[in-house]
Length: 616
Image 1 (tube, rainbow, N blue to C red):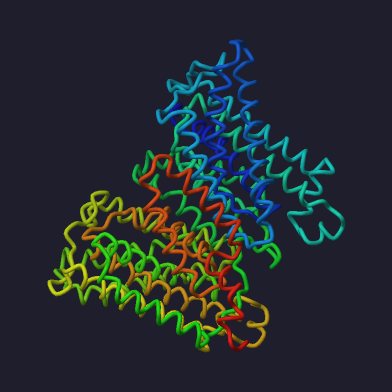
Image 2: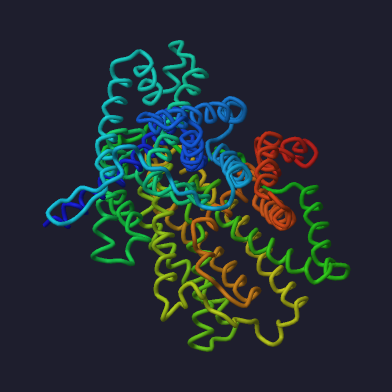
């Protein structure tokens, strides 16, 4: 009996730190609609800065807690600086583009932390007076775990008092409900956003600092916590602090007991929970249905026009360059352009559901990696020829997209995006843990093209034909009646429904189409590399595709190509340099500020008069 009591208390202790991170994230999103990827970095900074302060302060009974509060305050100030200097300049852009800017902040903080604090893991100091254990019916639990269990409800109560009993809290709740109305009534949104960002960053830093005696500080803390924090926020309901507390307790307890019942489930259990909750309650446990103004992660209502004669001529020159490229290119350059073409096709398939479809996705790697694994498994077990694998893999991936899309199209905004992430993570866990069939972490090796395509130049032309053909087909879909209807569904769901168009059916088919072409890119990818590993289906790959589309611009049909080329080339060149993440993150931020509509979108808007001969 004591063992189970200790497990319950351990789950509550883990939930405490998770709640602090999640409630800060929920506060920031509720007011500013920013999906802040840098929130995990603030959590990591809280741990590192707390370690530094505690080590510097004179030893005493309160030095540990003073160090914790100083660290949380320092992180709050850092978050406020990021908001003032960077994010404030981007509020006029769409929310997803701000997400890309916060990714740049993540990269910068990662390398700065390595440079300032070192690459070695730090063992956290113990809290004075709470370094022992408590015996509960023969089982032991650290005293500090009980302290953490007490801290979370105290923070929850303090936030409740702040948000309900103070004028500032009332303004925060008003902005959460309706930002436009709050601004119309004279609320200074600039100061409000900065204050909320400080509080949210403070809570993230506090979460990282108070877990120091349990987990120490390391450079993987940011990535390890951010996905879990997003799950907690979404399960509880975006913008709901009590919902974040409830969800943190549920996730904490499931992790505590899940490792006992199904040890392998810990990698995916919280994503399964999130998927089930969103399918049953599309707005989380305590969340409210969002109005169009509260739509969370949205995509701009871009104006897409067929290519003019001049633009087609420019496309012809690009095609001639691609055809002639092998004449003067090195083998490495061929490999790089093949990779750019594959990512361009995968990015274009994501663009298809994001821009015309208005459906953001955080799990597109499920289709890219799914196509790669299906092709690899057919070759490995059935000795399927490359030609047949390239035909069947996209079709089966399209079927997977149909299954996932059937659930996802019932949701909107960030809830839809997070449900796609949940399904992608479930798919990743299958290929990662089913080692006897998929090879697990060792992947599937020796998947090579047919003999006639084994030469690098031949495979280059095969890749270009299929990728450019796929991109042109997707572009064609956008200007068919189906594509125009899909854009109508994005722009005004109520009007579409009023004239009898089945909105969800069109979005569902769009998922399938995107899945087919992402699967084709994945199938080509495995033959180009000769192997496939679970990383191609993991969360970082999904966000790579998202960032490629955002970097190119969701307002331009050329955006996925420009973004994929820039992202892949920059990553390849800069990753060889010391502190490459700092440099790459800085470049991404500069690009975000210089090209607020993405590279292709901003340049296209400048050259629109030249390339557009007609307005449609």
